Amino acid sequence: MSGRKYFGTDGIRGKVGEGVITPEFVLKLGWAVGHAFKEQGQRGKVLIGKDTRISGYMFESALEAGLSAAGVDVGLLGPMPTPAIAYLTRTFRASAGIVISASHNPHYDNGIKFFSPDGFKLDDALEAKIESLLECDIEVVESEHLGKAARIEDAAGRYVEFCKSTVPYNMSLEGLSIVLDCAHGATYHVAPSVFEELGAEVTTIGVKPNGLNINKDVGSTSPEQLVKAVLEQGADLGIAFDGDGDRVVMVDHKGEVVDGDELIYVIAKNRHRGGRLGGGVVGTLMTNFGTELAYEEMGVPFIRAGVGDRYVMEKLVENKWLLGGEGSGHILCLDNSTTGDAIISALQVLIALWEEKRTLHDLKSGMDKLPQTLINVKVAKKFDPIKNSSIAKAIELAEKKLAGEGRVLLRPSGTEPVIRVMVEGKNQALVAEVASTLASEVENAKV
Image (cartoon, rainbow, N blue to C red; front, side, top):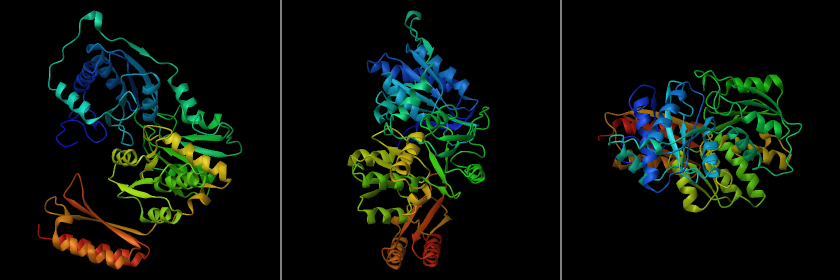
């Protein structure tokens, strides 16, 4: 991704009205995307979906205008989860899918990300082509070749049926009480239908979007309201999505939050027992070491990718595995979806509960998170701590102290002159001591 002017690891994102997150830029982006796909010989329809933030109206119109100017037809999906747009792009045989969303960010941010015809993120070559076209002036096609736009009315129903198709046909959630937190985001009108139609007794919070309340004190990044609702109602569990529906965390009947690492473990253990795991599991550099030990005990291969779903996806494809993700709740089940899908990931957990007739609290208990200490050390300038000889020696000594029952991770922040020192291990006092020693070594390092 180096050298890119506009695209980050997950599309383009920022504060509305600043930088490139303006209607002028997004109009041109629509034109560039349409032109790039036409150069590949694809005149077909491009689908546009969005989450519930108020700026979505503005950017939807801008994209529609730009695509039409390039001579590309548009299908408008309205508010829909990001993974739904990936799925619908495939089923409509569209040239591309465009998502207007800033995921778990506040309402004043927004962004644009893309899916290719097969429902995956765009490849680097196509992103580079779009960036080169953004440096050109817009050339509007002749009037008779302008693109047309139409609203796709049955998009939500199609996606609900797809989600239900990912569980066994005879599976019923009857007798299960669930609290759903939709973060006032893109899942608000589809997630309740999925779980109700499968038989669950569903109550909801975060299903009244007003354009400004997306992710505000609700959803997967703020599960406190969900914890309270589960305990007050005596529900079996709670499920929280983020604003665009690609992340999920859950709450068990005791009110304990179950994060992405634990949910992946529950899914993996159930699939492994049933002989359908399909290889191993991919985590990230931040996945708790207790998770790694639990997989080792199960005899399940486990590897770490860089932080970010793009890197998890790369490792899954490279190893031809199916399951991976992050503690944030971004979970990839590649036998069901081409991208992180919060509703489908939650359903995979419920399959485990249904098959094993146990509670979520019981199923997560096989994996014990190890104590962790994280220290952020401010430095004069960014540097790679691993390349410093004194720090490298201190890391080696720290790993000897942990004696295979923990791990050390030092990494520079991508956004500020800070080195993140993280230590995990079985002995909390030792973990704190090792982290403090390493942090001092970083502070004293001569770079």
